[in-house]
Amino acid sequence: MPSAVIFLHNANQLADEDRDRFLACLSEAELLRYQRFLRPLRQREFLSGRILLRFAMSRLAGIAPDAVHVIERKNQAPLVQLPVTSTVHPRFSLSHSRGWVACAASVDSALGLDIEALDTERDVDAIGRAAFSDAESSWLSSRPVENKVADFYTLWSSKEAVFKLMSAQEGDAASPELVAGGVRLRSGPGWHARTWSQQGLAIALCSGDRLHSVAQIYLLGATPSAWSEQLGND
Image 1: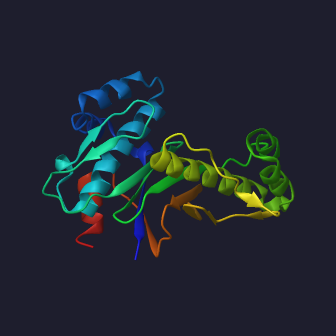
Image 2 (image 1 turned 135 degrees about the vertical axis):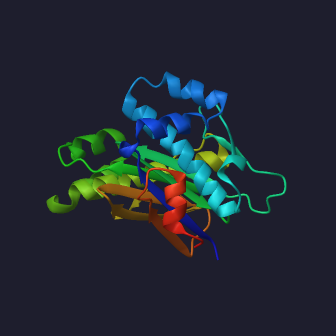
Image 3 (image 1 turned 45 degrees about the horizontal axis):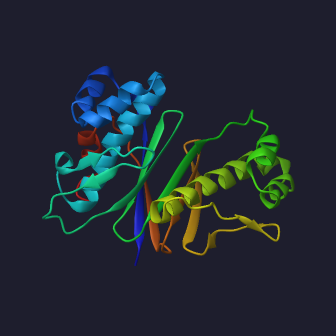
């Protein structure tokens, strides 16, 4: 049955020597994009995210990370090319937030992933009124005060994940309504959503097919070799 895996990594621990080795793995187009980011945090997220993508694809396809080729595309997610001999071609989605990076991958289904760092200082009701539909904003306003921040980020990340999924499948797709009859929806035509809270993050994964299982793996090391050692042959 369809399944997926989410690899989660804290890019804030990236050391200078690892950064230099990671940069050597990028394509020329990826390097140009990396250099266009002005903030060091965003550079770390982009760089670690691209290394994490290569690791995730190699893990699912059973090939070496350097056999994974990543092609930059303007205003779109990157394109991954695997060797013609590969019998598995995983689909993926990337996300980042405040130094954390995540990659969801599946050999069965299209995906959309979003992670958001929880911030209890934000006026989530005001943001909801500005960013959500009337039904979604009303749902958020009705939530208990003690749950409101978590509920806001769950809805926000779900909307982002659905949008990514729809965009990957259909191009310029409108984000569907995620609240109906005062209830937050967890599925709709062509999408199925799962949400979690981990490491101070709201995590939402949307898939084109209903998934039987989703593994969440928090990668403890700073490099692909450490990640491989952590996971072993599982």
